[in-house]
Length: 193
Image 1 (cartoon, helix red, strand yellow):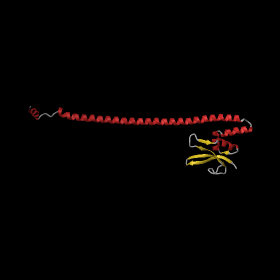
Image 2: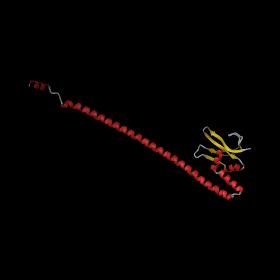
Image 3: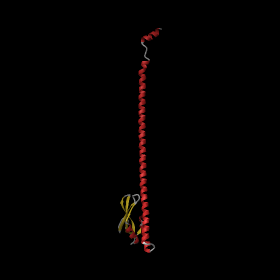
Image 4: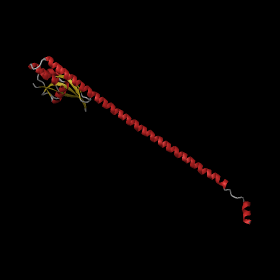
């Protein structure tokens, strides 16, 4: 019986989550399996990989073949490196202490890389959020300035209309006072002369 380490899909439409399972190669993808050793969620950034490394290593040492995707995940988690080092210990190329030391140094470097990636993603999100907030503030300020200009223009137009109305009303009142019509007696005296 050929044993595979592969993914079994679950989750809703377009939001898949996968179980990492040990299954017979002839079993359906989401069907019967021997053991569930972890889960994989590609919807998060970075993707969430939760695998029982000890069980995965046991199955790999017993001859289980991982699929390409699972092999990449196991390499990411260090299980493939641990298997490689363990094979070296079995063959007598290195001691168990040397293998453990190499694995720990690799694991520390990997954790630093993962944490730096998470921090980088977080700072990128914060910078995008800050830029959006600044753009929104600038847009709101532009709107307020436009409203202020319209109000000033409306006040200036109202003041101009008021001055024009006053100017139009003032000459109409003063015109009869300045150029009053001559009295009827004055016109007659001018005609006689």
